Image 1 (tube, one colour):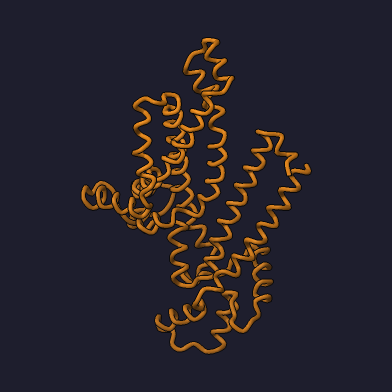
Image 2: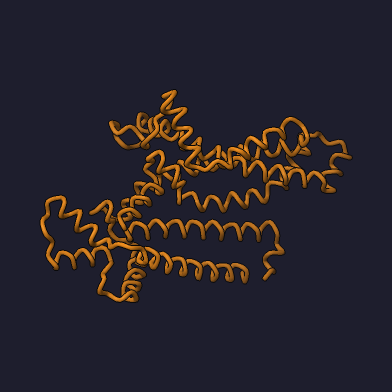
Length: 330
């Protein structure tokens, strides 16, 4: 219980610090979201806006150039307690919660599924490469490392050019066919899966090498342990030794890394989503930055922060279960 209380206090302080930074950083950026929204309304035919209209928009967005920062900060904390993330400038008059509800599922499904696939593929290949070290399986390591070294956006552009523009096998932009009705129906789900193939392939190719290399090195290290040598001396089947004795212990660091990486799933792969114009959190964040949309940026950063902190907290609890000695450390 003492270990749990200590961790809870630590992560609550970290969450408060992250929320404070989340409030301050957008306001340090140049530009004013109120002016941007007023210009947009004027261009839409609303005419010149009165001072009363400007004041109303400032209250709506939670931003006022005349209001002290500490008052804005207290108002921001109060809104968070009520679950009010504000109104988005980019998608006005939609609220930040509505925008997040529309974009978050796309990112969670795409990035989550791609991360899980890359993890399973990398762990599986790493187990085999570590077990058969020195054989032809080791020859795949340079290739995967080379692919991992290619920047996300460059790999995405290559795949777009080859599979989308040259071969015409898959669509290169969007998340689904706009002619279809959004919902849990066969045509829409099939179209969403079809549009997600290329972004998912980009993420898997870029991520699989890290899991493969880490698992392969841990397998090589674990193979030298006494309990593995004892299992071999007993004459156990090689498959059982590989899976039950070697891989089971070698995969623990990778599971920890995978749990942490899940916390970053909600942040999306920003560059990948931008290249493919995929309607996820990363693409929404880019739109918010371009429009100085403070409420939307703060909402996205808040969700990312809480997800990462939550994932790290679960990893700490997992460590305490796996290794009881950590409960008494520090």
